[in-house]
Image (tube, rainbow, N blue to C red; front, side, top):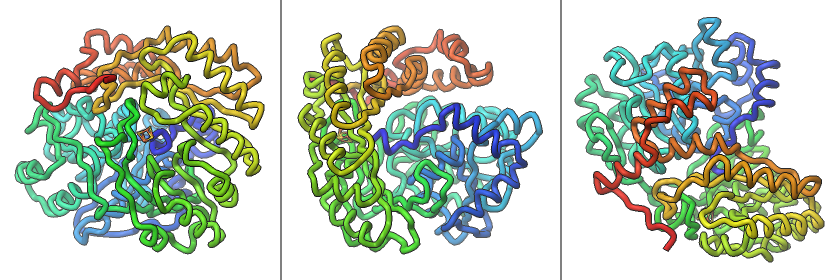
Length: 521
Ligand code: SF4
């Protein structure tokens, strides 16, 4: 799941990009990006939709979902879609009175009749505010006029908690979008009256219209394998996944990890046919990225990698389970140019992994390191969730000992994520560990692993903001708006959330009888 969600640009990289490109006029910037793309769709149609991504281009174009929706909208004869992404330096745009321009034709954001946002991650709500604001569009729905654009929400975030977006959007697609969009797109293309559009759209499973449905969000949609595979459209060197053609070989997961949104049965594994996958890969793709939360469980993964390597293409994999690795598999990855083995331990100790139903054992992680080293890879990246319920000092000591052991085999990079309990998972009502506790854990690990492994972590404060949004209701969205308007520093977030109910979304779900967390049982 972590690898499914595109990474945000680090501050240092943002600064570098701003320095090199960000001060240019948006039209020069977008033309430079276009020149590097293959697969761009240029289309004119009676109505054009602005497809917005609340993060910069670099992250947007690593999102397979964003690319799929781009193609789906453009496939409808009466509709065209153009992409709009968050500028690297929104304040600079603001000071210069500039609007974000669509990448395809340079059309200003505020001139679209419909804006559809793809949002992956709760704190990206601030990028959503930035884009609307830069486009001169009132952020709250209640302040918009009928001549302002219709604002639509979709993306991975909707599978968790879309309630904070309630005051800002007209309509959302909840969960897998393919089926709902195939019915919504003709309505968007042909509607002449918004009320009629809403009435018809409200009948589509998975469509949430806050003004009609209130806090009763419809069940998260899961498409069948017939709507898959999701296939990329644009190849560009200017992304996290440089020059990579993305294809989703499987969706969902057969496992049951208790913190995970993609777990079965919430998102059962849907496997695509190997032949369909291979046939969808264009001959000009320099690299192929196989996407899927449980891609190493996909039965076609080995022959698919072999076929791609035989075609002389590089390979990327969105995530690997350590217990699925063996010499043949790892050597195939190495032949496809894989230099860093990325696996998830997902808990600091075996005791906690068992408690989370992770199904990975310490020996699998050690074996992964050995296989990576034998295949000539340069690094093992290990993802660990900290702040899990019941985590003790001994669990952290076990993580330190394991990291030391792994680092004797291959250089190790630890990626630490504080647990942000998500709705629709058994841990949905688990308490957040707290900023102090997370900071203490990070400090301890940094001290004990100094010189042993690289360590990267989401900050405790940032995790708290994510927690408040992922558990919040409409008032959390309004608090985010207040914090963003005040300047977006942590003190602003803290102040804005002072009177906001901490479990607003969970309590709303209970009120309207939607969903209950199963807990740790
Ligand atoms: S293996 Fe576990 S963490 Fe990974 S996608 Fe499946 S349920 Fe989620």
